[in-house]
Structures are given as structure tokens and as C-alpha cells.
Image 1 (cartoon, one colour):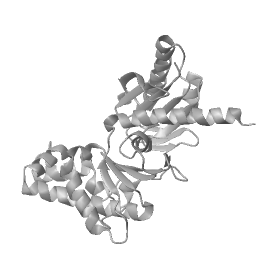
Image 2 (image 1 turned 180 degrees about the horizontal axis):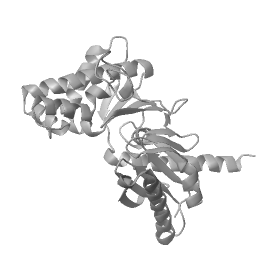
Image 3 (image 1 turned 90 degrees about the vertical axis):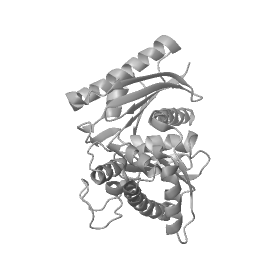
Length: 313
């Protein structure tokens, strides 16, 4: 059965699947990255996992995978297939595509984790059917994926979609990127957790607890939450002014708050727009499977391109 390997590498764990041509998940597995042993160990773990997935395809599906798609965090040079930098994994300039190609003997596509997840949301998730969409993931940081006609734009240097580093509060909180007042310092799940922990004097408090307190009517939580929503709305209006998306898909940990987030966010965006067209603002549909599904799409896209090249006279 023709299939591809889809591998989504996170900060601490990896999710993988063998994916059929119709998108069916033929096999799924998870493993730790082993990052506590250093970046070389992480790379070895990825290569070993991919090899085991190939072996599973041979043993259970009758043939090796036709291609592989891999999503990784950090800065990714997709054109060269290089994992340029990831703070949480400790690697720099890893030629991951070449290493995997040599190990598997098949074509390999390498993608940025958020852009890859956005690709899945755009094609088979909440943005399906939209010719222009923006996917924004509200996690430890904030990143986005710009969708155009079924593909995701990486940019000239691989930085497209870094909405978390749009300055929404000039002169505000310092950001590790070197700027002050970046969106992710105010509206990420990590930022909300930090603000809520300070407000309730509980170092263990987090964004999920803040959302529950908001739903219960806690005034301190409402204040923390509204500040985050206002900052997020400011960043999103900047993005939609530049990109004019038809659909705005919001995912990540903070989006799990549901209408506690989406009702005030839609209102805040609506209040801020003037000439801009208000996009449909919807929650992501694929959850933590988006990266893996997107990696599978990258692999199938690679095969489609290769097949087309082979038949071109």
C-alpha cells in the first residue's frame, strides 16, 4: 500500500504516522526526543524513529514509504532542508533533510512546525475551502502561518508568519528576540500564565486556570484576560490589514479556552477595524495532530512534484 512517513518533532516528544494517499492514518506512534541528552541525541532519535517507521511500512504494508515529511520547531530553512536553530532542542544548522534521505532512501520534505500545522488546518481543518487564511498558534510563544491557495508562504528567508514578534506595546516588556513590547509577551499562553500567577500570588497558576477563573467571574482574572485579548486583537488587526485573510484560524493552548477566548476576541477585533474586512475567526479543528497531518501533506506534495517532473518531456 503506497504511503508516506509523517513526523512531527516537538520540544519534548515526537508524533508520527504512516499516511495513505487518501489521508488515512495507517499507523501512529509517539516517542520522546531525548533532548536531555543533547542535540546530537535528538537528531539520532529522529533518524532512528524514521527508520523504524520505514521498517513498519515494509513489514505491515508491503513496501517502504514513498516519501517522508518532517515538521520541526525553531528556525527552518525549508528550501535547503536545514534545521537552522531551535532553542528548546539545542541544535544549529542540522542538515536534517539530507540525513533523513540517506537513512530512508526516499525523498524528504522538511517544514516549520507551525507552518506545517497551518497547512493541515488550511487544507483539511478549520480553514478548509478558504483561498486565503491566517493560522495563529497561541502556545508558549505565538507564531502564524500564511495560507494562499492551499499552500503556506515561508517567506524569502523562512520567517513569514512570525506574528508573535509584531510590537503591540512600544517600549513595553523586553522580548528574547531583542525588541520590547512583542505580542507574545502579552498574549501567549506563557504570558497569561505569568500574569495570572502574579495576580493571584500563586507561582503554580497557569493560563488554563485563568480561563476557568474568568468563566467564574473572578475580577482579577477578567482583568488579566482582557489585557491579553486586547493585545492579541491589536496584533491580529495589524496582520489582517497586511494580509486580508478570508479566515483567521486560532489554535494552540490558549484557544482551548473556547468561547472564553473567542467571544471577547471577535468583539475586540470588530471594534478595531475600520476599512478592513472582518474575517471569520474560528478555532483550530485538528488539535495536536495538525503538525503530523501537515507533515504527511508535505510528503505527498513532494511526491506530486516529483511525479510531475518525471513525466515532463
